[in-house]
Every structure is written in C-alpha cells, then in structure tokens.
Amino acid sequence: MKKNVSKSLIMAPMPVLIIATYDENGIPNAMNAAWGMQCDRDAITISLGNHKTTENLKIKKAFTVAFATKETVVQSDYFGVETGANINKIEKAGFHVEKSQYVDAPVIQEYPVTLECEVMELADDEGDYRLTGRVVNVLAEERVLNEKGQVDFEKLHLIAYDSSLKVYREVGGVVGRAFHDGVQYKK
Ligand SMILES: Cc1cc2nc3c(=O)[nH]c(=O)nc-3n(C[C@H](O)[C@H](O)[C@H](O)COP(=O)(O)O)c2cc1C
Image 1 (cartoon, rainbow, N blue to C red):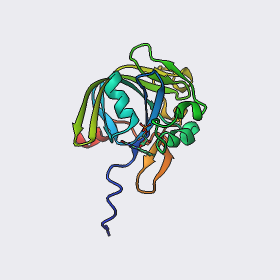
Image 2 (image 1 turned 90 degrees about the vertical axis):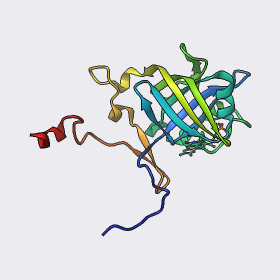
Image 3 (image 1 turned 120 degrees about the horizontal axis):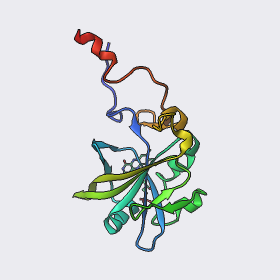
C-alpha cells in the first residue's frame, strides 16, 4: 500500500555540487548546491538563492563545479553551512585552489573531477536565481578514470544528497546497462 509522504523528497537522489568562484578581489569561495542538473549536452543549470556565490557569478561570469566525494564530505558540508561573505571557507577547510586555464574561476585541488563553466544566464526570479552554465572543460584526476579514460564513479567515491533524511550517501555499483537492458522488451 502506498502512503503520501513529505514533499522534502521530490527528486532523489540529488547531486552534491561544489560551486567555486572568485570575488572582485580574487578571493576564492565555495558553496554546496544540490538543486542542479545537466540541461543540455554541454550545459548545466543550478537553482540558487542570494549568496556570496551569486554575487561572484554576477561579477566574474564564470565558475567551476566539482563533484563531492566520500573523502571530502565534511568540507563539502561546511561549504553549505557557512558564507564566504565572512570568511575564506576554502582556506579554513584546508583546501587549495589553482586558477582554471579556461575560465576566471578557481579549481579546488582536493576534488577529483571539476567542470569549468562560463555563465550563460543568471536569471533573477524575485531574489532566487536560475544559473545556466556552459561547460567548456572537464578536469579529472587520472586515479578516478577507467582504462578507457572515462570517469569511474566507484573510483571517484561520488556522493549524493538524500533530502528525505538529510544525509549524504555514496553512489553504489552498476546494476544495469543504459540503452541496452530494456531493448529485450522491444522484440
Ligand atoms: C546539502 C546542501 C545543499 C544545498 N543546496 C543549495 C542549492 O542548491 N542552492 C542554494 O542556493 N543553496 C544551497 N545550499 C545552501 C548554500 O550552500 C549555503 O547557503 C552557503 O552558505 C552559500 O555559500 P556562500 O554564501 O559562500 O555563497 C545547500 C546547502 C547544503 C548543506
């Protein structure tokens, strides 16, 4: 029997995206964002409130997005509970940045996979924002790649956000092949 449950769970699971930006003085900042997804072949969209990050995006028109991992869960959560308006969160977390070669935004070294993005649109909906970014490059540590050079989620120890229990979960193993397993019903 099915029951009606809290709407705190609408999409499950959600990604744990770490948006990194520079402010007008070149100080790097990082924030945790779960309300994001891929919206085109080379584009992503993220729903944002009015944060230090949003201000930085307006100034620099560039950002990076890293995927949080099991090893970085504590620092990644910190990036979601403190504002960079008061403190350099990246320094406080003991993380390090290098400037992206492609966009005016920091690449946080401790995350194995990072998307380098330019702002396509930062639509203002009465104080809430919908960020759309074009991914101009993807950087990955060799140690998280498989033999074909593709990112392997299990090597990455990718985590997801469970908004029902408000916990982070590690993304598990492969259970099927996409565009393949369902084909048997077409016969
Ligand atoms: C798990 C988690 C997910 C979050 N997702 C979002 C989100 O998708 N959009 C948003 O605007 N804020 C989100 N936040 C809140 C911001 O990360 C938080 O307000 C942060 O302090 C903003 O940092 P900044 O002021 O340095 O930019 C999330 C926080 C957590 C812990």
